[in-house]
Amino acid sequence: MKERMTMRLATIALLAACATAPAAAYDDVPDEIAGRASVIDGDTIEIRGVRIRIGGIDAPESDQTCSRAEGVYLCGNLSAAHLDRLLAGRTVVCRGHDRSYDRIVAACTVAGVDVGSAQVSAGWALDYVRYSKGRYAAAEAEARRAKAGIWQGEFVEPEAWRRARKSERRSR
Image (tube, rainbow, N blue to C red; front, side, top):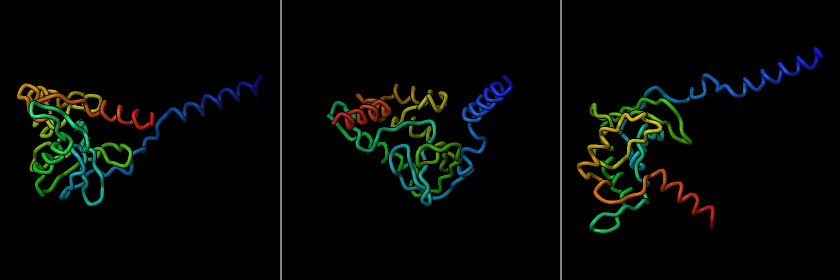
């Protein structure tokens, strides 16, 4: 009986240890990264070899298309181009708070301007509510009203577009 109880307690302790995330899970996320950035796509940049996902936003993928009155266009490319103009070779300061795949997730500013907010306000990214907790909701609503960026026509939300593309690749 005592042996059985010891085994149960050991099992419970092991399960509890596995279920608890280690406190230092993201020790490799730098507090701050600053420098000139290269644009990878509408929500990802690179500073000194470090890939950074701009937290709280979701932009069309580089090869994603959208449509408007003039026809189909590469909205992902235009999103990246807008981000490139916004950064314009200036120093970008990013404060890391997480890691996603091979990228640091961070809040970034350039000349005191929140880069995520600027992308959403211009209509070239969406408020990624699951991660932003609605931080960019007002900016997205304004972009939608103004028919800015991707809001000037029709588009598939980037997350749904990625999911469909992944599913399509699996079915081949």
